Image 1 (cartoon, rainbow, N blue to C red):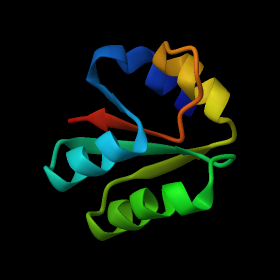
Image 2: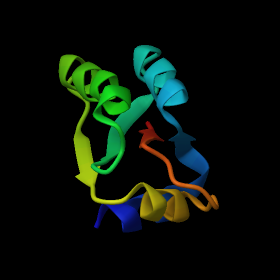
Image 3: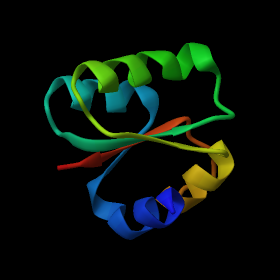
Image 4: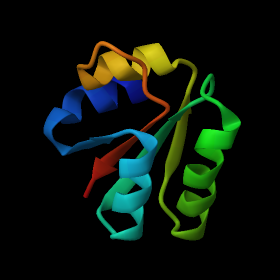
Length: 83
């Protein structure tokens, strides 16, 4: 389901952990998607900040599939959907 949601958004996506964290701090994010097969060290900050800011956080199983849903040829650990 989350892959479909990401694929439908396209123009309102923020791809990557650093950009996701920055956008979350700026209040630009309505939802975050995190890949379970990503390094926990990388994704834990996103997960923690989402919880602090009450941003819905969805988990998916594959970085590769998440990247493909974003329209990129590489995997991504996190994706944010802009408000």
